[in-house]
Length: 179
Ligand SMILES: [Zn+2]
Image 1 (tube, protein in one colour):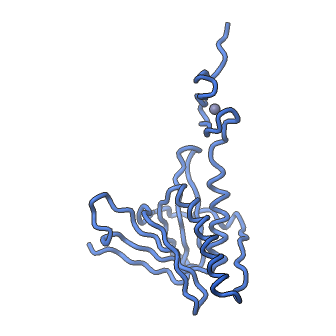
Image 2 (image 1 turned 90 degrees about the vertical axis):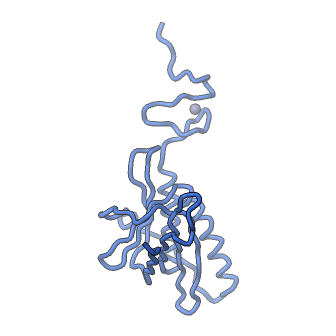
Image 3 (image 1 turned 180 degrees about the horizontal axis):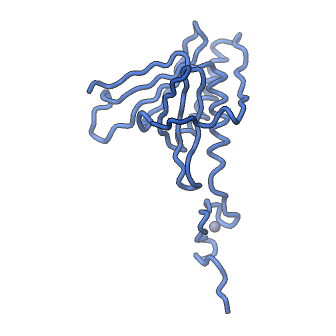
């Protein structure tokens, strides 16, 4: 099958979300175009790096185009949760960013993860065209979602599972022995 290339221009909504138990959450990127939803699987680290990358990218745009109004980062949480059907098109490999100055639209480019040795040109590609504010809001929400994982152990700084935590700072002793 030739690789699919999907351009959603523009998206009506763009978001990210996580589903599952803390520590086992799966992260998604989802865009809407009217009634249609396009969903991709992503890694938590990809959402976190994207948030950093987007801020740098927007700062560069402001330097290149000083007259651009500031992009808003505000979002309404109820609108940011993923909508069914959660039927992901693919697992995201690379994420890239681009800009169309004429329409003042940014594009988030997601490439399918390919197995080692496979031709990267065979990867499916989705391009989410959105406003700078839509992208920034998605990233700010993404930072919030990624930080809502497992609580961090005050002793060692590692995440704690709901079932308990073998803390290396306590030599792995989880509870005190009963006498
Ligand atoms: Zn610990």
